[in-house]
Length: 474
Image (cartoon, rainbow, N blue to C red; front, side, top):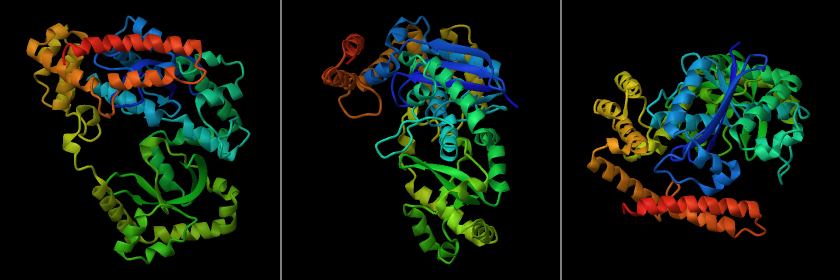
């Protein structure tokens, strides 16, 4: 069994495309969840970026951000030393597939580092948020949670941690290393009190093993999360999405006869409607694949009965024409929704839309990092033809050695950043006016504490320094 590597990111904003990491921590574990190694990094704010004041308040990262002697670029290089040292392993976190790994991949992309280093060459991705949700669903006493206004379990780590481990120092929550330590304790608790779910989750961390698990059992249980609640579902593998290549499963509370008889156009319209009878189980999102017995705990599937569930699954698997029609229709629906403006996407938004770098570009990026100084790195950039990576390479130089750039290059990048940061329009990145408005709103909160007010004043002073710097370019 591979080692586990817990990772947690704290960023200076919520956008995975436009914010950046200011702190990242990791804990390496053996298969028995015993600690082997750890790291924790804090870095300075990346030049040309405005931190989101609310994010800084949540993670309390402002003082360490401005006091760090580590640039973002140096932090990323040191991080990759640990990634290479620990790999191959199973990288995991809390909502890691939804946020941390996405942000890390985009930060790798912008730093001209290997983008998918944590889920290639034998390493895999895991996420313990869906594992915890499934564990709570089928073993309600395995972990304590508070409830939402609608009576649904709340799975925020800063809520789950104190309820289950009262000795935790709650003042350290939303620091990367504290969140890693809390998740480690959650993992140990789930391993002890929901062992079958924990063990099953280890079998679907790679795409190959997840696909094998999905195709192996004629009827199996998974847990879908929507409307704030995890729900058990008895499903069977139906087909592969013709565009996205995801496994699509049929929800067996439905009778497949109702859909097999439909003509193609009617079938396609049915797939567009809410309350779908078919759902995706993307292999890269750590799907939870469990025995059918778990779904049969619910009144819905008890009433239907295992025999009927098997009959429905067998009917689907014996009808190849139905599978092909569903796959084709799903692909057409996805193509119709496809963003026609992909060619106009900003470089920050182009990682997934415009594909992998070529082997030649990957080698050029290695040469960029191996270059002895920034002047040599700048020379290597002339060989990078993909405009995305050329763009980010120039910005790396702007952020770390601006005098290396030609005067015209520097002025162009600087004025472009100034225009973006001073914009008063609604955009996806944090602008200076946006940050100032948010600070004012926080200051006007009823009964705001002196601690929070003083913190916001410090952040405001920092934002004003950024304003003065970029107003000179406008």
